[in-house]
Amino acid sequence: MFEILPMSICITIDFIIVSVWWALVTVPLLREYKQLNYVETTKGKIKESFVRLGSTLKHLYKEDKKVFYFLIGFFFYIDGVYTIIDEAVVIGRSFGFGDIILLVVLLLTQVVAFAFATLFGKLSQKYESIKLIYICIGGYLFVALFALTMKAVWQFGVMAFVVGMFQGAIQALSRSYFAQIIPADNSGEYFGLYDICGKGAAFMGTLMVGVTVHATSSVNIAVGTLAILFICGFFFLRKSASITK
Image 1: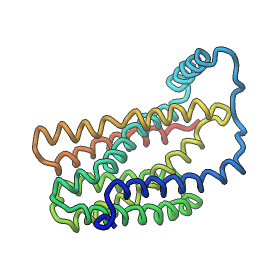
Image 2 (image 1 turned 180 degrees about the vertical axis):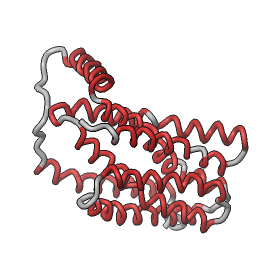
Image 3 (image 1 turned 30 degrees about the horizontal axis):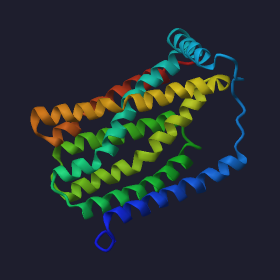
């Protein structure tokens, strides 16, 4: 297809497919979803929002260490996850892999991600979410360490497959577990902090990879350094899990 159609048309088709996908998955939410826990809007919404945010942060630090340590752990390990996902193409090209190989591998990764996200969803009905998150972090730690020896296409394929195994699962399980440990009445500001920790951490992994590549000229070592994020994330997650409310 890429050889038959101009790249501009391919990109347009891609955006149309994505738009249709989002429309299809949004319709059921618009028809069925009802928000049960929320705060009534008042005058001075901006000021009130910052006041509530400050109050929530103070409460977390002093009285809800379980959630506090979870957010710190999430901040670390989810950045490692996002970095590996976002830098996958750059990593592949640094080893000289062609666009067709990268495209096939990344498409297969998405198929694997869907299958294993479904599997982990069923496992979460039998096992605690926190234990499944540990497994996902262990999988990503393996990916980071495996990258130290990666040279061939098949090794990149193994790395992509393992990433796919845990890619959707770790995000879904983290959100599900977080919902279990926070007060329902304050879910709005708590999930606001959750999203800040997820999006706000996006710079760390990329910075680590960039600095390491500049210092060592080795992509293998650069990806391997991401193991630090997963180890830190695991440590704080364990600390959070050890606290009983």
